[in-house]
Image (cartoon, rainbow, N blue to C red; front, side):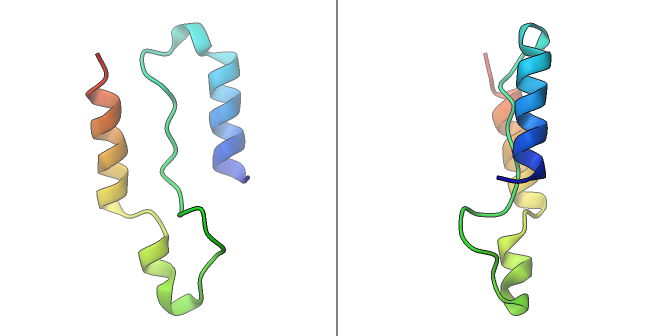
Length: 60
């Protein structure tokens, strides 16, 4: 777990009743950190960030 997981957990714990949608994380894949030449594919890019935003906005 990393910084994003800790931040998401704290938000969920402290603001649970104020949230209108679940907390999502846009982070690297659940794999070991890759060699430098694969880093751009592994790190979250605009497409993965937009996917998270669309998932949050699509919540009923």
